[in-house]
Image 1 (tube, rainbow, N blue to C red):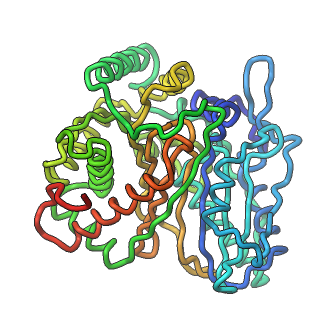
Image 2: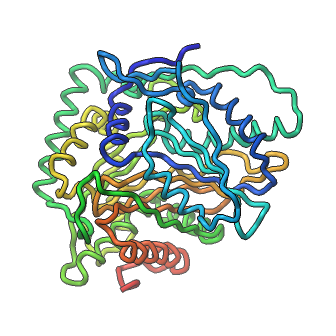
Image 3: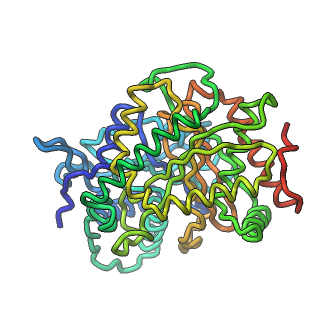
Length: 445
């Protein structure tokens, strides 16, 4: 079964970012307890690569554009890092985020890293070209790798491997109302709205500590985990306030950044933000999470943050805006504008593109136990070097614990400022779970 096809608009954009913007990779990290044998893991990876058309694809240029092509793709190789190496899993992830793909060879990489402090714990780190996967499908892939490993290790009879069908680009899967002349018209209207709001709001972002051209930027990550008790209390509090977890996190991030930028000189800050969204629930056909494909899109919003308002008031405003945007179909209309908006970043590299972004996949729905292996944690991070001055937040909840991986663009944002922001965001979350009073901006000065 051939998985060859022409890249869609979003997929072409990700390859453009890979070549011109120091990558746009999606890195997924699993902490696995058990004695993982690299030879068996390699066999599991081979099975998984055979099963998924995009994992055995490469990107080639033909006369009429870019194509996925399965012929000539390199087999994925497992890189095993010795436990004596002092490199932490965060450092490995950071290196992977900033390593471009030679996309005419292979579109994914795999690293196995032993935990220095616990020989029974390992980190499985996969890096996928964003043209072939989004966060949801990448975490599902980790579950499949663990399942295949267990089957091989335990000597189970493996059924003949059935190759999954190759999915078309997301532009072909969107509802009919977002296609044709009506879709084009709605995309133009959305573009005009974005231009008008940018002029009206004049949004701000973190001040560039040091300017670098796009080619000289890199991604850096700060990771934090919320324990199960606080995670559950935070989710419950959001439900009590009738606010989504995503909106609450967006409000906390926006509030924290606003306080850092204004430094008491003003009570208000205008921002522009991106919320990454899964299109699967809104497509005209059901798509399984196990099908690797880039099926995420973004919602761009503008807002004025008043640091004296409660977090729940700010979160409610975020929720209302997102609900309105979904009803308008902006999540599909922006697909046609994605490359144009990226081009704008290259034409005006000093311009403020984003104040913050958030990608929250919620509860990760894969098993914890795979025979001799136990999946203890799983999270993800996406490269974000392009957006200087922005704080990108990648959120996943698994086994009752919420993991937040914050990504910044360097040298624009210093590690010290980013760490201060991250610590204040985590403090906000703890505060909201320990105090029933509304947060009105009087903590973390």
